[in-house]
Amino acid sequence: MTILTGSRYEGVDITPILQSDGTQRSFLHNRKITSEKDIGEDFTITDFITGEEWDSLSFQRSGKARLWWIICDINDIIDPHEKIPKGTKIKIPDQLFFASR
Image 1 (cartoon, rainbow, N blue to C red):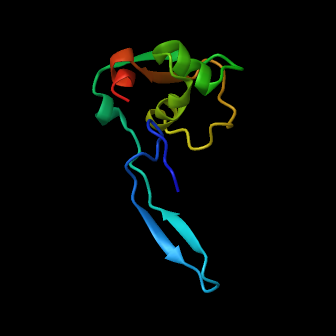
Image 2 (image 1 turned 180 degrees about the horizontal axis):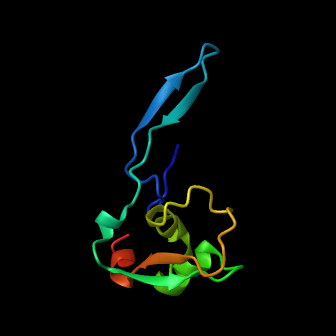
């Protein structure tokens, strides 16, 4: 199993599991969830606008749409397809935090 650089699973342990039929599967261990503590005070609070996409917000702030999961993590969004009410306050890390990813 290949984990891409910058993936939310980068650095997560992978355990190979040999099946009874001789095939091998990979077990991906839990990843560390990015929290407010990880970003310190380097974030902006903004109002969520209905129809916004997490990857678009990430791209606007960091130039990297693939880091959408960081915004979801620090806002305790488990399902990125969950409907977020208009005007909900969300935290978006500053560009320097994203740059370290």
